[in-house]
Amino acid sequence: MLFTLEYKNLISAFFSYFTVSLASCQDRKGPVFTIEPPNRVEFSNATGTVIPCSAEGIPPPNIRWAHALDGSYISDVPGLRHVRPDGSLVFPPFRAEDQRPDVHTTDYRCLASNSVGAIGSRDVRVKGGKCNIILNYFPCLLP
Image (cartoon, rainbow, N blue to C red):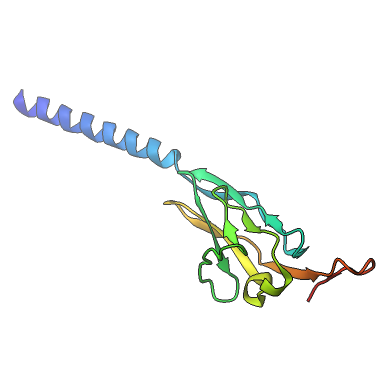
């Protein structure tokens, strides 16, 4: 009788574990883009721009931006580039003399990852140009 009781407890524990494990596998989902950034973004230093990127998954994915060329993660450049908590890459308006090719004329990629997997967006070619407010025609020159 003791053996039968231990066997039943073991089987019960196994099925409880299997059911919980199966449920947790079904509750997990790799990232999927809900908003994938465009492949090309042009803007002037007078306006700046925001490039959206968001993804969903279970657990919720982390959004990071990287240089498309080498895959290295970008860091904030005060006054020139930062990533918002919602995953958007922001280029605020800037003075023409503060334009930097490594920030304003380069390719980026949005990356979303969680414990299930990771995805990367298409490359985003960014071109931020200098604006000359004195000219009435062709006021913004993009490199």
